[in-house]
Length: 252
Ligand code: MN
Ligand code: MN
Image (tube, rainbow, N blue to C red; front, side):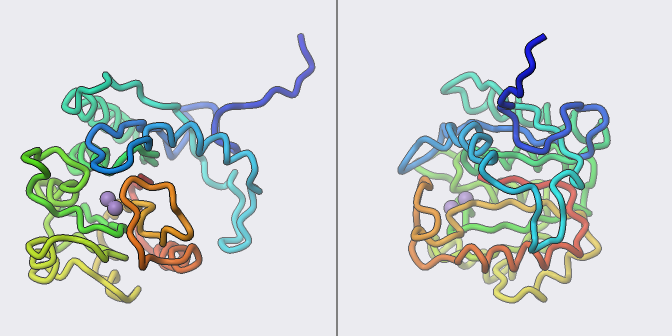
């Protein structure tokens, strides 16, 4: 027996046992519909590697990572170029996580991965499911270049399963006139923490498109957009979400 220690390629602090875990981190290395800069499919493994440079204690939340009982399941392996089959895989694996009584933490990949997650989770929570969406972009298009299955249409797609009254959007600063009309009509865009309070009795899925951050903070995104949040501003929103019933999340 070699003495080691050996480098673990999973996220630091994970529970190696799926069955006894409460949260399942799952890599979703899909960037098939990215319109500008591709490469986000390489993100899950890079994020894992970078995790080894972090401390396991968060002074901000006064919490140890070990207090979050999560299992890193690894990355799904997608049939390259086949969007529909990839989304089906995400939906099936998400459904399994929830039928096993656990919650998902998806690591993208691009934003379209959220659609099959929401489809699967809505089967469990029905009209109680709500979405809090952090992004630079509205992601409310009907289609992009004739394609309905696009990262830029993901929140619109999610309205098939979640009533717009239960969707709140934060940090949005780019979109088409029609998308802005949708946000105004449905009052989805919020600017103050307290505007989220109407979702406190809901089952909340938090989806974070990292381009919500300013490109000076987070430059390596598919479609960078100036005028974004600082890191601490985003953390302030996360801190406010401590009082919410979060049933799943992803970072794309
Ligand atoms: Mn997005
Ligand atoms: Mn975006």
